[in-house]
Image 1 (cartoon, rainbow, N blue to C red):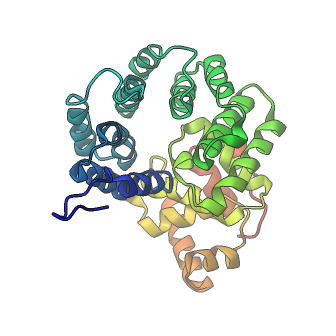
Image 2: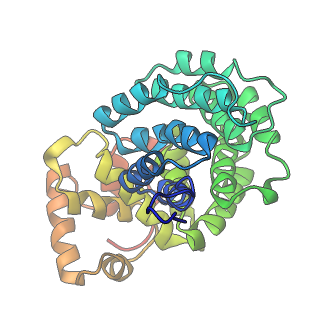
Length: 313
């Protein structure tokens, strides 16, 4: 909405919604820009603008760009520490600071920050991020307690449902309840695929990556979607291979982790089967392996993966 002078008075609400969507769909740069638009739009809702600046930390962290993280952190210092417009703004600030700490490997600091939030806090996103922080710190009981505050989960936004199901799956796997873990993962994928929710699968640790790779190898109704998420990891973190693999080879390696056939992978990547075989041949040569099984096992996700891929090379 604009006034006769062209000044906006919607507080940048459309940009706010676009930022939330872009972040959870795995587009941190776009989310950052939309959140910036909210602040520039101004408007009469100061609480909305302040909240946008606090939430802008999440896409900054997701981008992996330390300069953006530093800029977001500087922005936090300009925000009020108390409630704004009736919004318990201080708890969103705590989450933002904890995410920055996590991005810098300061897990204990992130936990200490989240402990400032009262146990009876009912803000869904705050409790979800508390579960993520506790999971990263190995404090599984506290992570589970935070997830229980999201019940009923069916009433939460789709992106929080996906994230909570994924965290819970890791907790169940750590507790030895593998069947339950895989059921939860399949439920997370069922929500994520139609909505294009990607970020929860990117913001995971080695335990959840290993679990998701096992899930792909076991078989899923969402083979292509999960294979693409695993390929995303390979492109951002090549499991210690550094620059030895090209972006396309990393992507191919990600798809090889699942159960998709050569024809299916080629179709998903939009290339010919012969082109895929060329990429695969170069990939095997760089890894020093001769088969798909060996390629998957070699990449550092653990010896338990050896032999988990059964489709043809």
